[in-house]
Image (cartoon, rainbow, N blue to C red; front, side):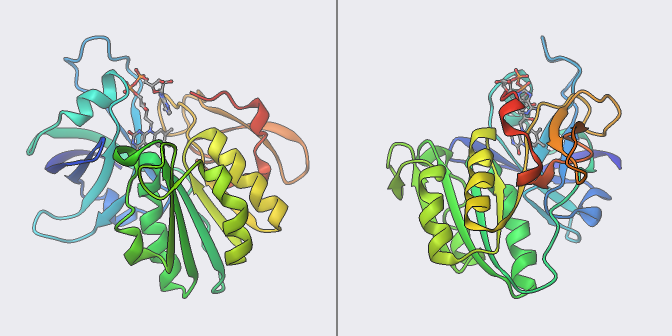
Length: 270
Ligand SMILES: Cc1cc2nc3c(=O)[nH]c(=O)nc-3n(C[C@H](O)[C@H](O)[C@H](O)COP(=O)(O)OP(=O)(O)OC[C@H]3O[C@@H](n4cnc5c(N)ncnc54)[C@H](O)[C@@H]3O)c2cc1C
């Protein structure tokens, strides 16, 4: 769906901006793992035409303002800076929900959800669905430092147990998600690992899960110009079910994909 959304609230959350946008049509069709592609205002100097992708971190299908979607923005460039400066009642051109969502287990399995930085936000709707299916949910959240750590408090409501790591040790253990994974996989006995974050972290998630004998599903972020599969501008190197290497579109054939299918060493990190 392409909709003109209306910004309802903007909140500062650590290093990020949390946006709630009235976007009828998108919220109702959302499944955990989906994202939206947003257009950047015409008047922004030096903003290229490519739409910017943002994970959907929450939806409310009904409410005083109709259906709403939530997103978290980290200002890293022209487009995300513009998004971070949006105010209440501003309009936002959005297309969504886009992308292949997480596959949900049919049985009540033990799940480890690993989220890095702002990307951790997109795991919360997944945690809710998993809990509805009586899955045991553990969350491992990480970031470089406290301002970039997202959702550590909310996670205590969404998961049976929560572990936190930061690069500078300002919250939780000092270290990286990759450091913390092996012990947590062993102590939880996770059957499935879900990951969201940078390419090196997702690579570590996929490798650790495989070593532990667990399935992994990861939400990859490959720079993608259109987000809908049309432009073919987001090649993701994978090994197909037939064992043959090929390129798929990260936006439409992903962004959620089995970790053991990605040819990680051939992925260019943004
Ligand atoms: C599926 C998906 C979901 C995403 N979800 C979020 C989110 O929830 N919140 C958020 O803040 N950001 C998210 N991103 C990243 C965001 O889309 C990019 O940071 C944004 O497009 C950069 O645009 P810019 O104009 O601000 O910066 P630019 O000036 O274009 O680039 C700034 C930096 O971002 C990198 N970058 C550019 N495009 C992308 C891209 N498509 N993906 C990853 N890095 C990119 C560049 O290499 C550069 O380092 C997501 C990306 C994808 C692919």
